[in-house]
Length: 274
Length: 246
Image 1 (cartoon, rainbow over the protein chains, first blue to last red):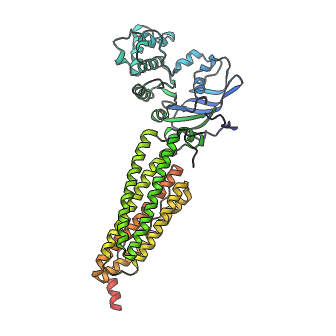
Image 2 (image 1 turned 180 degrees about the vertical axis):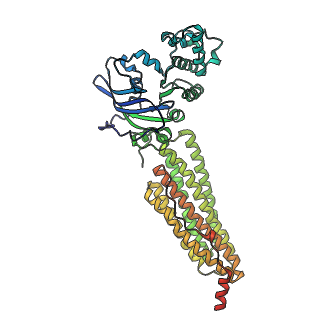
Image 3 (image 1 turned 45 degrees about the vertical axis):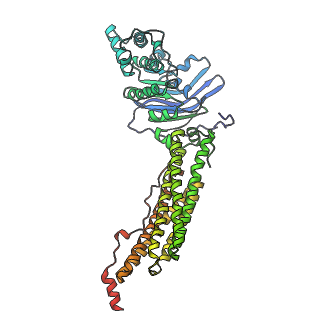
């Protein structure tokens, strides 16, 4: 990246974009600033994420998109020097309120990471882990039902139904990632955060995950960080472009990829020096 | 011009298709100018050159098509790059059609060569051709310099070509009614005039493409249209009446 780029002095007016009124806002972000020690990583982020939609966060490395994603289920809490200010609401509930149970929040806001990271346990136990610790099943039958449904929703059940006792780490990369998605949805979250979920997968496994994301949006709200602009264009309804810690532009995915408003968005998506 | 791509060969790909359009545009301008000269001077030798030139115009269109397919497949262009690639496809199509019309004018002129002049219709067609030629030059300049104002201006100038076509249409019908021996040359002249009028429509379409290229949107206002020959008629009585009075 060109380090001579001047840091924008003013918060950029990315907010001329308005979601259609009929959409229910699931995650509302207002004036969020994040500091890592002295360094500010995010500047006055304002973003509304509509329920049952896929929103892509795009931007060059270090632009703050993953930092923003991690704010949404308070993953930044585990970094000592991270300081988050501003307001983030999940269905109107302030998730940074001191009375919020972070463990419960993370059950409502699940996360899937770049590299598949199944537990070194059986396929069954990987998916059953969350429901067990959150006490979502009263008996063994209920637990089995949750595991099967989650694996089915993640599009993995048919491939693993005869070997649920086998280790999760023995699956292929694409299957492992779908196992992680099954694990994430087993706690019945409302929002799923995905941090480059397909970047370590081959094109076929990527296509399977993309198809899955489109199906999952019926039941979940999905926010996905991706470096693949084609992927953002394919799977999301809305796209947000981050640059140097600012949210530069938000819009319909189609508009962002065909006729972006901001010069920096245009330079980024067309592969120009910005 | 926009800032450069990180992948430099992408820039040279885009420059290549742009220069193909410029070359094609130059050839087509020559074709129009020569075709209308062929008409006014009944110069069949120059006519053959115009017809010959059309082969190169067609070749360039194929080159543009191939380059566009390659860029779409290899670069997956987005935003203004995507528009730049899609627009050349249409511009090349428009230019190719205009070249065909010029060629057709020359073919028809070879029939006209042995017939007498019909009023000053050839001169009128030459003036129409000059207008279209200027429009092409301006729209290509607008394309290269990404100048939306010039493109919009060209789009409106087609009305003048249409109006000349309307007047010529009525004039030629009258000549045909006056003397059936005029019918063959008049029909060819009508088709030639229609060819030039259609060229103007293609230039208008090119101007709209340049507007889209620059702004990402098609012009949203309705373009004023001047061609009303589809609804025109000249009454036989009027012509006969005039003759009787005289």
